[in-house]
Amino acid sequence: MKNPYGWITRSLDTLHRAHRYRAVQSLEGTGPVITLNGQLLINFASNDYLGLAGDLRLAEAAIAAIKNLRHQQHRFSPAEWPPTATPRPRAGDRPAQAN
Image 1: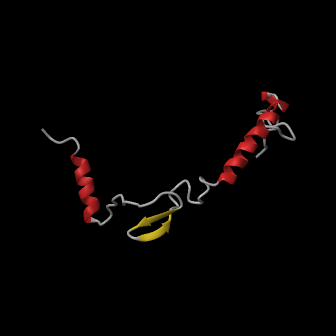
Image 2: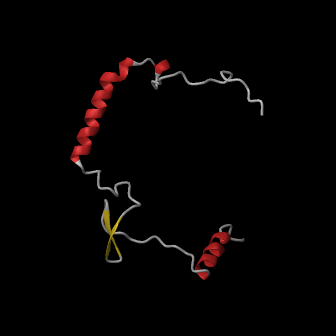
Image 3: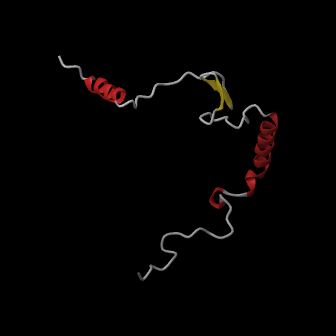
């Protein structure tokens, strides 16, 4: 019986021969700074490369913003949200272009 996954092996062999195979590299550390092959690097692949996840000032500001929003949410009805200075155009509100 023929291996139904043989194409994977052939594709990987092609990548190896072309020196285009990429292996997952082991990283040491978490957050904005990591070690790769003994070298300290900024981890731009992390969602915390700015190091803000552990910043208590940011957490406190987020909590204050949420509390402030909770007090303001009754100012608009769902039909009015998001608040805009002028109504949004709807289909048929503008004449057809003559071009």
